Amino acid sequence: MVPSVANPFWGALARELEAIALAEGYHVLLCNSERDPARELKYGEELLADGVSGVVLCSSLPSLDHMTPLLGRGLKMVAFDRTAQAGDPSSLASISVDNAMGAELATRHLIELGHRKLAFVSGSVHSVNRRERLRGFRSVLEAAGIDPAGAIVWPGADTTEFGDKDAAELGRNAARELLARADPPTGFVAINDMCAIGICRGAKDAGRAAGRDVSVVGFDDILLADLFEPPLTTVRQPLPEMAAETFQQLRARIDSAPAAGRSLLIRPRLVVRESTAPAPAPEGAGVPAGAVPAASTAPALAATGSGPSAAG
Image (cartoon, rainbow, N blue to C red):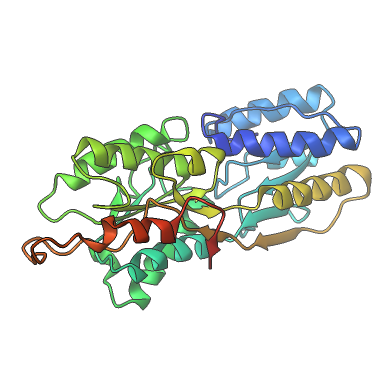
């Protein structure tokens, strides 16, 4: 059960899991839950009635109370992209990238490029993975001496809309609004790559260029990240490794007696491409006549390149 395959990350995970499962004689069904507990429960009841043995649950909701009755009836489950939480079932396995570390890598990269006015664009932060990414973002600001309260969290933690199926439009709207402010951010940390792509487009709508006037970092490293223009700096989740571990944990629970719970965190990597560059000089600082700002020179673009180089 994934939030929505409108985000290519979830389609890529489904493909990885299916390939592993088919090789082991298992079949995979795909459900889009939109992070709705009632929808997840309905899917779970139907799947259990149809003889499905195990579920990979990817919504990262704080509570799994809605699924607990199904576990009592024999359904096996692994939580993906969600760290273990207090009150989780004792047999639950949780497989996740270290989301806080990933956001730390992204935010530190922007600060090292000289950005001080930053925005975190997410939609709702009520899921476990998004809370962790926001925590990582804020912790790096604090360590750098930047008041986290002065950073922009758009549209803020009060919204209940996750934006999984329209993340690109969410990012585009965020960039349009934020870049119209009197003191706009120069660096953006996006909740995922589709949101980051939307931010880049919104920056273009506002007459600015990603990788020159503003810097944008995504999260996931979907296939489109390297194909987009400019190629996207992003935090890579090692999907093949995560999918293999997820399948092994689920199969162990299906094939044997109830297993003890397990929580596994996998390290992310920062992949630096061309959507990030040194912070632009403050307005009015001036540039010597005939000079070209460093962020737009050919050597700077070559240094960040669109290849697979990674930092962090």
